[in-house]
Length: 109
Length: 222
Image (cartoon, rainbow over all chains, first blue to last red; front, side, top):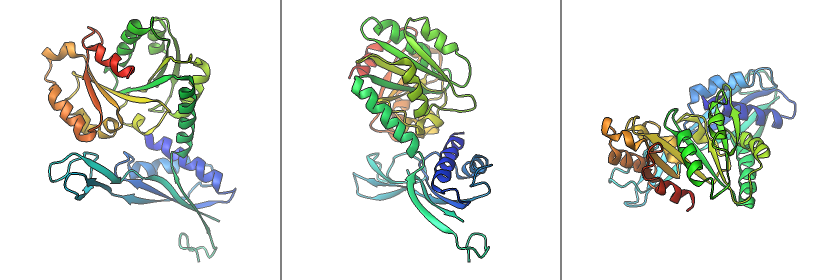
């Protein structure tokens, strides 16, 4: 359940940056190749912000699909899983998206 | 009017655009610089529980301990049992208990380094919590990540836990001595590792019988 540690990290940053104001909404960006499960993230976020200035804040999640560029055939492929395989058969792929794990913004009073 | 709650207030949006694990990564970078300045090679050992991490460490310390100073950080949810095993080999060890936590993070290694104070030019092994999911996400500041899988596990483990295997610099297939008694397919496992991490090296060893440990020591000193 690494989502709890990640949620605590988000809560820590958010409370530090909110400057003492109540936090209404936190937007995070989660790539499909990060091993972070959005539903588990929401559950843990609510726990992590309990009793802080972000208690009750909404967590908005921007999904980012996994993407890679095939160095063999030049195709840009979409990756559902972190298994590097191009339809052409090549495994020589450069991951170009899906590894994002960022706090985008927060909305405060 | 506020788009979030319709309350009539004007809320301010603060743009951050920063990595969620930025704090962990900062501490990890500090650990890395500290270890590099001492010339310490720090290896993060990760696997599922029971793959033979501690046995491989005991064997490694017995074989190399006379040649190079070694220290160990043991990560487990509870107990100091593994630290006691390592302490019996004669090296300095710090046990980190994560409680409900399922992985080590950079601040835990930071504190452990204060306690251990590894000698210049030494080898530091960090035995992470036995778990093939969470430890993959947390940079500790190590110089190499090793994932251990044993032949009593499924051949397809690299596909089932791709994030962990994708993070590895080296994959060690352990318990080679048990290969005649199990269904494990070493070549298929190598292909599975390559499909999630073409850059990873793969070696096969038996930590208890000592098979092919020269490959392991060769990697450690490469």
